[in-house]
Length: 112
Image 1: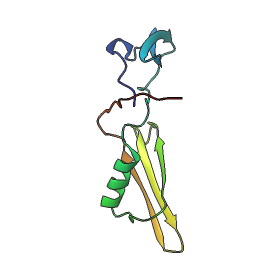
Image 2: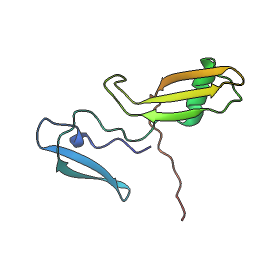
Image 3: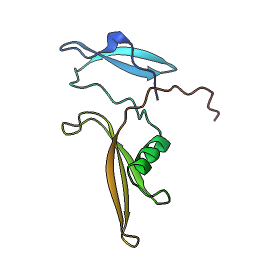
Image 4: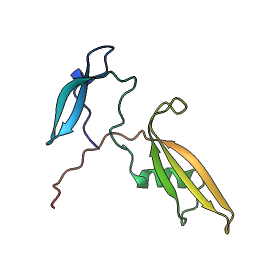
């Protein structure tokens, strides 16, 4: 996950500033205004979502499909969809979980 954008990049009614992550820093430019905050990537890991699903009754040893969905009018905030569909074993588990984990910045370096 990326660090939060600088305070001066919050949405405005006119003359909106657009933060962009480049070269390990935020660059600010002007652009069209947005109605909602951007989704800067998932905050929760797949393991956290699996743990929540198991606590909600999902089987531990199953094949699941995980997808993160951005804010919508219906959801209002980013949500993870966790789905298990196994007709043979008669398992049908389909739930949404909030992407509400605290921001965590990973350390280390990527090597090509």
